[in-house]
Image (cartoon, rainbow, N blue to C red; front, side):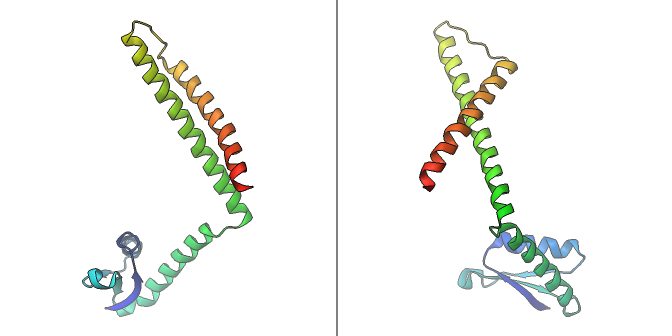
Length: 142
């Protein structure tokens, strides 16, 4: 067995192990010294080492390509953040509305709690979150 990679985190090492195993490469994780060195070595048979290194290098190249801050990636990241902001804001508004409806119901006042009403509140809350979230982001970046 020969060491083809070293990782500082268990999760990353297990992902690499799964990748190699999916390619029918026999893998051994050597984490016996993890407590001392905080590294995990991935070992494979010598006759599979070159192929294993190539697969792991492709994986690293793909990961770095996804995280490099190119102009296209910034646009995608901004869209993803906007989508998360919309979803989070909509969910918070629905939660608040349901909580208010339950409190008012205890007082004998009934609010509508049907899917159409909750969908509308989600939509409005999400849009308001986008409007005010972008404004706050722009001010903090200036």
